Image 1 (cartoon, rainbow, N blue to C red):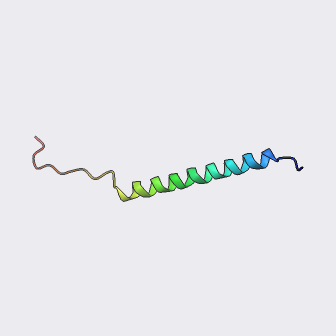
Image 2: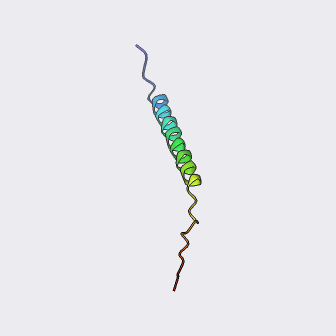
Image 3: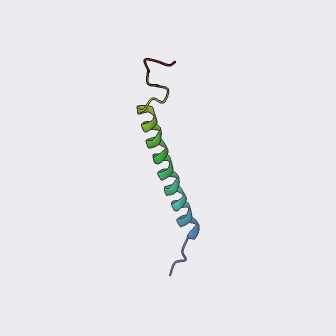
Length: 47
């Protein structure tokens, strides 16, 4: 019977985790671009 290659399995898990994290970061960045943050409501009377 062949010996398990735990290093390979660990590396694959790390790659999957990095890929998921990157996708989440890109999704979050896309949401932030859609919602401008420096837009402030204009009030008629500031006094």
